[in-house]
Image 1 (cartoon, rainbow over the protein chains, first blue to last red):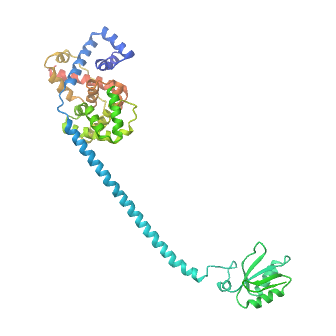
Image 2: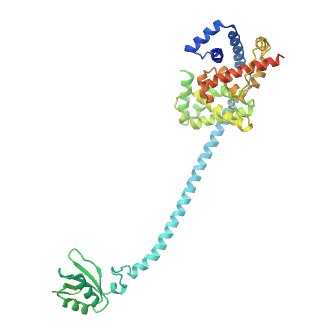
Image 3: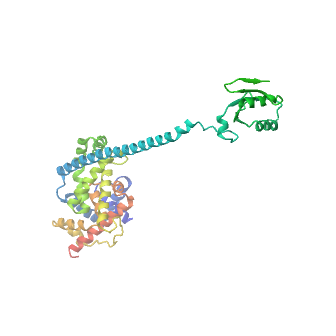
Length: 205
Length: 183
């Protein structure tokens, strides 16, 4: 208990003790002479600390130094900002140039392919020559069997390249002699309902 | 208006970049803060450096102060941290060591020494021999007259540690004074 009181004494001496702790210390001091001596010792020590000469503080010089450092700090910050911006804009400039270059290369590669117009590939995987040939629009009779249609198309060397549409129209690519193919198709009335050359005359049942 | 109210209002203006408020804030605390730092470092140049660093930190972090403690507590806390950090760099001695010898000296010589007219030089000498953590607590308790709760916030340790450090500081002072009196 005595050590606890002793630990509180410095704060009794500096006047910051309050409440129950203050009462406990006051009571102990009234009863214990050794504690009163301790208190006197601490009061002397506090006086000395209060009166200690630690030299002259930086004062106005310190303030000037501080203000100089603030200016320096602000200057450094403002220099850093544009530098950062420059770095960022430099990166963006390089990225933009790279993107432009890539666009040009892609354009140079893709445009000639478009001009060749050979990007259409038959669903059957047939050769490009067929697709580039005449296109016929054909409808088949509802009773036509897939097996029979297949045999007919192979016989006339035609390929389905599109369809069926909602109306049941198929697009056929033929390699040569479209008129001959049309005639052959029209001859199979049990399979072919209508046939016509795209952009040309039609033939029907 | 209390000192804390004044300091808080200045700090608010500092947080908005008001340099004249910053100068007023500096003038309000500069001397006390310098003495606090110097009491631990015993080097006026280093103390001035840390004082400068502390106020620069205030300028940078004024807007982060939330008013949960007194402005002076916050300020002295920054200074304490910077001082301890500087001391760590220049020595291997752990600054938070509380392993002080327990040998109390209650000899009459020590007490008598303090009651003589020439006590001042002895006390100054002995204050300088205290460990940094003891001097910091002693300075805050006897120069700043702060309660132990506030000192605990500044030096970032439990309140009981503050009381113990103060107790050990007093014992060390008694021992030192006794030696100087040839006791």
